Image 1 (tube, helix red, strand yellow):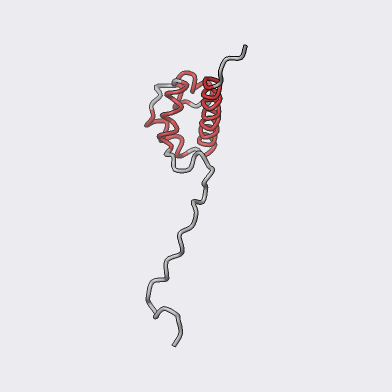
Image 2 (image 1 turned 60 degrees about the vertical axis):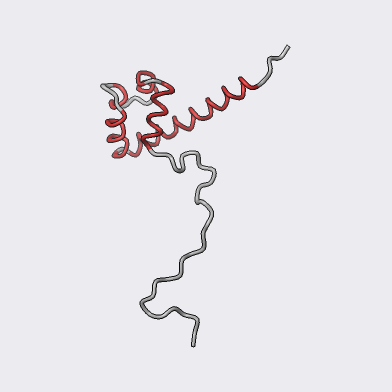
Length: 103
């Protein structure tokens, strides 16, 4: 006898692995959450200046933005990059608020 599973049996489950992207700030975020956060932080008008695409400039909405960004990889990359920049700016502001004033 061997230790092999009988023919037709499902393979043994793989051991649980660590998350594939533990330090990726975009991991687990939906595109909708990213667009909503950017619109809340910058406002649609400024967002349309930072990423000059029509869905941010003319009658902007989350729905129209998602539809366009899902079809357009270069625009999605710009939006994700801007989101990461926004996170860095938010962290800087928090750090500045936590530091005591210097005399």
